[in-house]
Length: 154
Image (cartoon, rainbow, N blue to C red):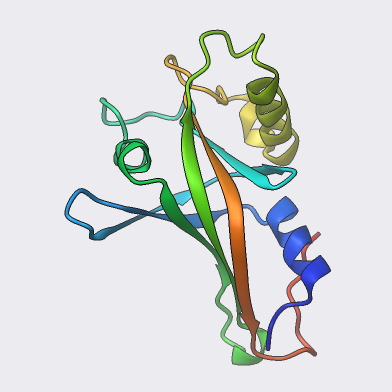
């Protein structure tokens, strides 16, 4: 069964992690877990100040080349009546502000990320070269095992 619409919206506002799938140069899917915050119909995911290997991340390169992306929010539970997932089809664009404090879209996205993740009190939301993925939600699909065990969306 589908998750109720208002619950899907609350999950997009509160669920802590999603799996982002982009398309690699050979067309193969590339998945990584991401943090994200929603502002209207757009989900924002930063390239934050946590340590990285160096160079541009594959998800950013992939989104530049092909903006089609998918996000998956889900919960596994030993009680299979509590299983659910929410899949978002989206179109990504790479946002690289010259001055994040003056760019209203980026400032709003950073504020939303800070409000959702207390970890950003210690870790910079944006890395030294500020980059965000802005994902416009195009469609959503969902499933849950039982209407008696819907996820807690905060």
